[in-house]
Amino acid sequence: MRYILIILLCSFSFAASAKKVKMDTPKVELGQWHLGLGVGLGVAKNPLHGGDDFPLLLLPDIAYYDEHLYFDNGQFGYTFFDEKNHAMSLIAEFNPEKRFFIFWNPSNIFLKNTIAFTENPGQVIGDEKLDSIDSNDVAKRKWAIDSGINYQYFNEHFTARLNLLTDISNTHKGWRAGVEIEHSFHIGNLIVQPVIGLWHKTAKLNNYYYGLSKKDNVGITYKLDSMWQPYAHLQLTYPLSQTKAVLFKLSYDDYSDISDSPLFKYDYAVNIFMGLKYIF
Amino acid sequence: MKLTTTLVIIFSLSLLLALGEAIAKSSNPTLSVSPKVCVISEEKQVCELTLNFEWKLAQEQNICLLENDEQVKCWQKTSQAKLSYKAYVQVETVYSLINQQTGNKLAQTKVEIQSSHLKTQRRRLRSPWSFF
Image (cartoon, rainbow over all chains, first blue to last red; front, side):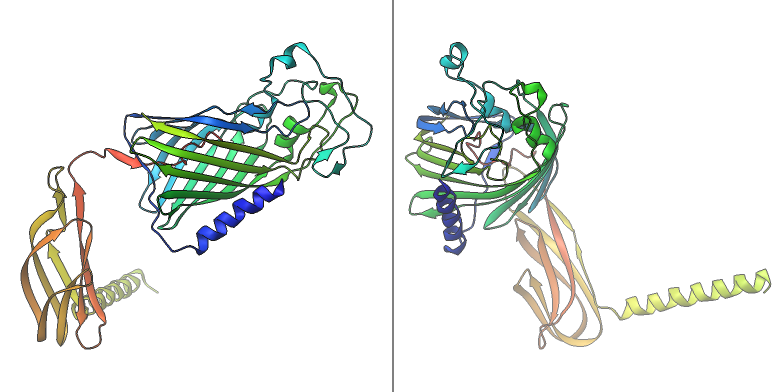
């Protein structure tokens, strides 16, 4: 599945070498809800043993911006500096790792899978690991609220973002720091928006979600170190009218730094969606 | 050293410094514009105003006044002049005085634009459809 990352990286390098077109940063009306809905087919793959893939049939796009405050697709922010090329905000959002511990399938409630593990930590053969701990059988992982600072640099050709977030909900007690670059270019009417980025996540964060402790009561403990997590996203939009467009989204998050944890089935998480988007 | 002697030395040095600065200032090319700010309304997106320029040089030169990189007016062998100029500006505009022969920038000033109406839009800080 690493070929997805390679494809996404290629799209970004193509973007970098493509004819330099000025990037239009989308603008939103102040004090108004911006609502969009994608209707189509897709899936959010769960990399954990026993974890459910989440069907993506509807994909919302929800944003509200005031002069300083904003809510944008799950992130709350207060922008205290917003100039031509720079913006800096205080932000808060749910830590996304919890999403792999949500059990969507009713069978998870009624049918518990059997635990299968050995004393040795997992070895990866191909894409799938032999030894495993089912994510349904470990102690409950809670939603954490991470908060911190977000800096953005806007250029004619790309946007760069820096994030430094720490847990303010006393859940995982760790922190994460990330950098990403977004580009946008046109091929005819098609709008291509690749994003590449890298997170650094601390051992505390990784251990809370993907480590194993006595609390998990699965017979073994497993400690993780901090990790580097590269990721790449690609969005293709083909406008049909002012309010309708064909939307394709693909994202790849790499978990190979911590995928030796017996909870991991795959060392990556992939989301894919294709459909029609409507802007209200 | 007596206190009075010290005070006299400090006073003399300050006087010398101030004098030096004044001499340096008078020999530096100066360019001033009035008004420095123009307020645009929601209905009119362009600022239409008469700008009054005044510039002074230490010696006579062939000089041009530029609006951003566009030439406004040139003077031959002149060391000071005044100019009233009808300008149409939309964004912050830089006015510079350059030596016509060498192209060297001698002085510059700017006219800022302020909007009288409240901001109605702002840049979106996350990619649309960024739930995943």
